[in-house]
Image (tube, rainbow, N blue to C red; front, side, top):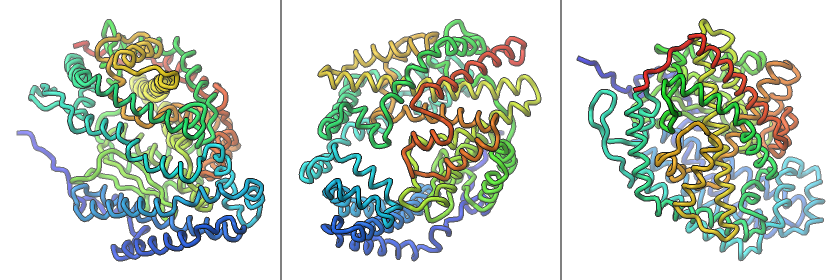
Length: 609
């Protein structure tokens, strides 16, 4: 008889392996007190309406009031989110989170006057105010607001556009409902032969399994479900693209892409350079795909063959504390200070380690300004989970150093750099594992995971980016988006990015399954982030202390400047294709190394069935 191990409750796991929320609030009463403080701070800020341009002192007072309000809301929100995620069935925790979400919306509406009122200050006067030492802490933010002046309409028009936001969210909301609630994929016999309902979660597990027939069946059922709604899905996505184009035009941007990149001051050349560099790497991609085909033991690759691990990175159950040691050892190139600070944090209840009943799945980090970082894990003892720990620790240390060095207005960093620190950690851990590999098989497994990460993050996300560039250009040119031309374009891009993969009904409808497309021009940042991280990690490994110092300064810089400038100071110029090319050169070298190991017998081909 098989023994089923029950998922523990929170009181059954060691308290030292749960996060400590007292750094945020010692009691529920303290949280409630801050709710009242938030409303009082809101009233204080609203009372300043109409005075922001009167003087430097008046502007400083309003900005201080806004910052104080935002700090309270952030703390309330983070605590409510963490308590909800501890137990997603806890009605009190759910209600608390809903309360703070509603409060944040209410406060956002009441204080929306701040930016328009700042822009109502004459440009010369605002420039003079910004240069005043009394506003030094806000200088970058004020200059960024001034930069947006050509794209801000009258207060009346902006109010109408803001009010239309509820309507503008309709395509994404409808897709989410269809994708997560209404679409059904039928049933399937799993690896054990039991007939089960096919869900996206079960399909993901199947697509990573060795049974190719089962993978083919699961992928086919997923594709069929989306294909049955292809016209509706094309209409929803087309509406989302038209929304992006509408808002860009109303705010005077040359294109929807310009509008999306403007916020972080990213030149469109960065976007185009990413696509060009990845397309140049076709020979290396071809060698990687051929290696994958040979290891899987198949004549032709299909989309359902791309997510199978070529080798298991580790077997057995890795204890969490052992994983902490592995992670800290992997990050020794970052220096004693970084490792000591991270060790102290991991030993100070930054992490909620174990899966418990009704706990949120997955992993993340959140770093509130007025407390230490918080990391959520669901420890399963695999090497992949060790990488998750290293990844989230990278985010945590980015926030830790930024919050320590920056005042609140410039502490938060943008998504363009958010994945850099986490991926630097993954790269350093990868190189450590390669250095310590005890056999060719273990070395091949580490290399295979790296190659798959580049395939999924740089190659695939860049393909997504090029698709978005095309879809928005179609609407901007007055053309239509239909299920047929979306599928045709997707197939053409598949041929360019993954030339050895068969294009069939499964690949043709894949565009319809990507939720990120409802947040336009977002996914490219995953690819640029990984490329920048590889370049920084190589510098740390090869140059040593000067590169470490630049990197730690980058972590401490938060949002004190635009992300392109922060990365340039760290040693990576993302306005050129060189960082992406360097990342893909690493991919090519590691592909060739893995191929040589395979040909030398480090691993046996999978059974093709």
